Image 1 (tube, rainbow, N blue to C red):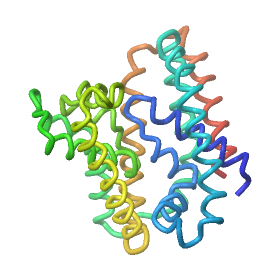
Image 2: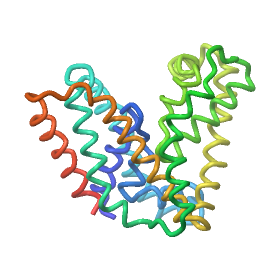
Image 3: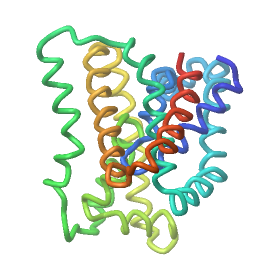
Image 4: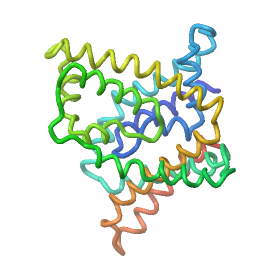
Length: 260
């Protein structure tokens, strides 16, 4: 794959981590780089040269996006919130035609799995903790959860931590890692082992239950779209619908051209 395209896709993946209700790994799936990224992480030392030239431009794009474009995106979210969200809805919708070709609803159970995946982000608040513990064991679990949200497509880590009442705890650890060295260590251990374990689990699903895996991702994809639409639905007026639609179509054609 062309390194420039990988770099641009890395930028889009990085931006996906900033948008509420969306995950960077979901963007990786719908841009067709997720499976190879999982293989590259799990088997890097088997083919280091091959996977380096895949991961390097992709990872560089994510890093550049995090450093430069995240602040730009946050500026537009603060000053042109609804236009920015419509643009991103279009960016996600632009990948749908290509993504739908990756799988099919083979069994009746696939529809049930899709429904559960679609409803999962809605049901998460039922398991929230209003006064979570900050013990080292809990921080280890939070690190593992952060890794899972990074690897599993369609799950927003920020949203999960907000729902669990642990967002400020994680933010303090990341923003000031030396303020609680032991806490940071346990969180980091959970993150490290979480990435290894969840990446292996995802690779097993891709090999043994690939169609089911993509049905789950499809449910999470449409759940993300529904969530973003719920954020913008109250802003639509007779005068705003046309400019909103133009931003949506701009986003659609940008990612449609990259995901074909």
